[in-house]
Amino acid sequence: MAPSATCPLHSMASVSRALRPRPRLAAPRLGTSLFEGCGLRVGCSVPAYGSAATEKADWGLAIAPSPATTLVPVVRSRQIFCKAEANISSNLPASEPTGASQYEKIVELLTTLFPVWVILGTVIGIYKPSMVTWLETDLFTVGLGFLMLSMGLTLTFEDFRRCLRNPWTVGVGFLAQYLIKPMLGYAIALTLKLSAPLATGLILVSCCPGGQASNVATYISKGNVALSVLMTTCSTIGAIAMTPLLTKLLAGQLVPVDAAGLAISTFQVVLVPTIVGVLAHEYFPKFTERIISITPLIGVILTTLLCASPIGQVAEVLKTQGAQLILPVALLHAVAFALGYWISKWSSFGESTSRTISIECGMQSSALGFLLAQKHFTNPLVAVPSAVSVVCMALGGSALAVFWRNRGLPADDKDDFKE
Image (cartoon, rainbow, N blue to C red; front, side, top):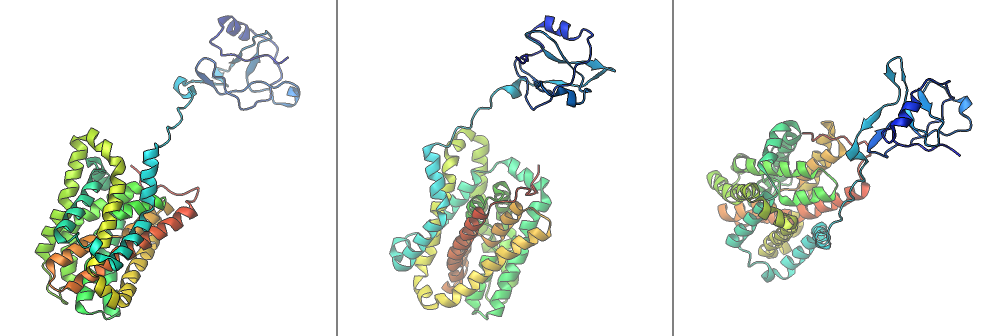
């Protein structure tokens, strides 16, 4: 019968017997067991007897020949060959994660069905516009403000500090959003020889910041959601200056552009609600934590409405000129997705980060572009590319996210977003 192993602290008599000089015993065959009887993790194993003569005898282990033999380290040449690590807490059984509640699972399911809601809203907007056109300019502004507020509720001041601690990772996405995308929109408008109002609308939407829909798509694609939120936050803040400046620079030669009006509207609709959300999270954390679980679903619902309403308001134009508008807008988003991904790969980012930057580059707040076009341009055709972009952006981004989700991430994917 093999001797049993107990913790060295259980019996001082056993310790005394084990440390007495005795002839060297053959070394036991070592396995991978851990002795955890008294809250100590011991880095050696239960001996297995039988063919010990074939093993090396230099393990420094002594076996006390008593019914309750204790395995202890033998000190030779003032070295301890088998160390015990006091780690009581690590030996306690880990508490199993409490699964998400049924309510949270339903919210997550409804959130991941985002592309389905967009398609449904698009169909309603085209064939039953009266069901969604009630969301006109003033209510549209309120809806977009609530969308920005729901994003702000998920942020803290620490998130902004993380932006400063990760300038390169966030900066690449910012440059892709406000350098590559606007130049791409300008090049497509000139290459396809769009009319001045449609070209201006395409340039305007290409200069808009990232939207909350990109955060949902990043979550579905198994990208870096924290990075996505930070990039959306940075581009949202930058939109106050970058959107009117770039629109004036690239489209000012086509139609008159009220850069100051664009900046004021962007500040009111985007930045103010975001800051209110951040302050609410900072100073009313208990209240915020209660509602934060449903903010993704609120974002999906509002985004769906903000997709359907523009489509409904320009439904007649889409029925007559939709074909010629779909190509430039779809090309804008497809190329932006591809460039965002490959620029990230060229910058030696991992797969998760590359997916995130790709989605951020390809998806932006087209609803903001639609609102700005309505408020600051007299020609209604300027708003049409933004309305088409809402659908192309949402469907293209969500389809890409589902593709990546099914593909999975490499096992050795690099973590580029470090604290």
